[in-house]
Image (cartoon, rainbow, N blue to C red; front, side, top):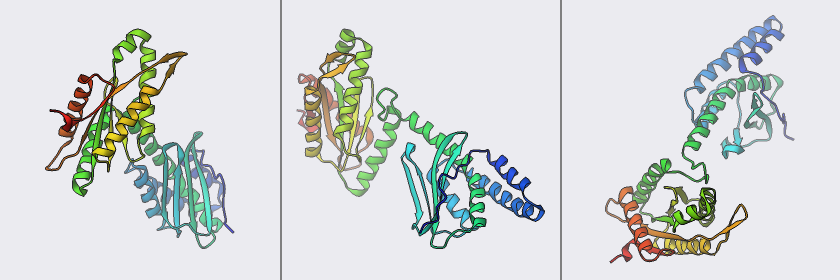
Length: 313
């Protein structure tokens, strides 16, 4: 049967919690607690060397095993989509809900085959006090980074993240000899939508197209808002046929969708340019230029259509 401490919260500042523990102890226990305090402070100092959440948990796991044995440590933070496990889960576990100033930092579970003693549980709690503030800083930093790479209107990746991601995927595909495709998408006659219905409706149409793009791709693919009404979709492990099929399916879906914006029904279509990564040291710049050229051809061909770059005469 598991030994579980549920919802063990850490709401006080670390120094207050540690101070209260020390004041409550008789003299011999104060000395022992002083030693724990020093361990927690030393651990906190080590943890402040990184703002990477995954690395932070790894360092925490590496450091505390010097003080107490365990088989696994797992950390989850649903808001950020974090699930990290180090080691193999065992029979007995201690579960802690990490909270600072009412802010949930996630849940940490430590387990092993042998039951934890009260002394060991107290030590773990003390060590966790050295984790919560570096962890909060790391989560705040990650949130700021994510916000900087997201388009505030649609929630998809923005132009700031585009170059880095495409460079990385081009390098990976070139190294592993895998297929990579890029779609360049433009909402047709978007100025007329803005002029005819207003900018709020225009924003509504942009969000609808972004949602359609997100629904059309796999979890391994990525969609970016490149400009006002322009989008890019990066398709990993996808050849020309697969990219063309997805592009046409997306085009048809948007054409057939009646977008409702504050009670107003609006129709929209898109033009899509398609290209694939080529061999012989292809680059992000060349990939994007071909997709953009294919998009230009789609728009020149009457819009509401898909064109592959090599289709050009």
